[in-house]
Length: 508
Image (tube, rainbow, N blue to C red; front, side, top):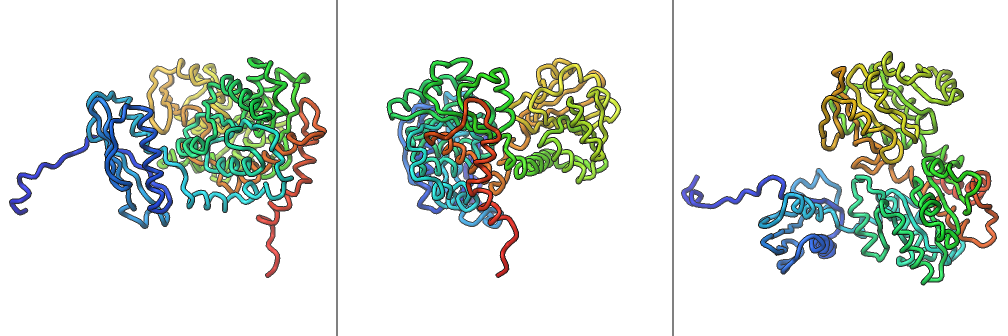
């Protein structure tokens, strides 16, 4: 080397001080991207000044921190989609900031709203949802204020656009963030809030419903619940019954949400449009969910050889049945358990190993993979003694209720944090158990779950349900309306458009 390098000071940024986000767009999108990130930083620390441009900006904050934002095309363009831009955040100075504050600041780089390029791609992936306002009566949602509790993945943005096109201004929409670690949840939240949509955490559902009811009344609208997992109507029934007259009904997407309504069976005061129990959803979605769950599990376990190994599926419902078939297609030896005998017989008739005692199946089948698909708690601390070999526990249902995580951890001699993979347990038997994703549904774990082409018809069904309950004289009675929901979904033209898209193509 030449002598000119000897005295040069090379500054090394310590680990844990750099974060980046790649997204698709044009250079003209960078100012908005930087503004959103700086806005997020300003909510965390006291910003003193901002200098630079949309390619290189420094944000100075008290007491002595400096955040640098850099943007440009990726160095290896072939490793990314065309038109990809990368925003990188570097914590150049961290005086006075704790480790937790630094982590929070670095997380702000994920607060970039979706660009016009990205939204165009999403609309093309979801024509049934995006174009539904063209087939619905004009302004069919103009008298309601929806509360939307739907997974914060990219497909949700197209649904919100459609809701607005059907007559709902942004200020009349409340969104509950379910808090799953989706791949793009921070970007989705930012995109919505910058449009004027109110976003609350699901943990504050009661407060969110108070706020929403007040805003809806001021706008002269009735509330409408669109839910994925029973986050809203059970809260109204148990904690805010006085707000019920201000709502016209519930559109429910999942069986877990239907299950949560069981304590009020026979005395529900609002009509329920049940996409969850519809023939359409059962026909289209179940295999997609199962396939997405297994694909994401394999992504998290790239070194595991599953072929020829034993697996156990707990819960032979719509999803569990498909999970069992997907695992069998991957050459695993699959056993099935279900508390309902008729389901167990169905699994037996399909050639699966079955058993009425879960502990016996765990002990004798010795699964390396246990998939919970019941929608309830299927594996408790009492089952730990029956686990004889190393295995992974994987959930495909809502939140973390499938496995009693605290009980299982209480039966372990050692508990460890496996980071992205999940929680590690070493049992008294010596078996090592990994609760993948800490017990949350694996198909949503830092992923987008279903391809948008799968979720398109389901989200469009939610809009059909919303338009139905918003219409005067809809004919839906208080309580479950499964047959009526099926009639509407099968006669509204949605199936025809779905079949035209994915059915046999006409000769050209």
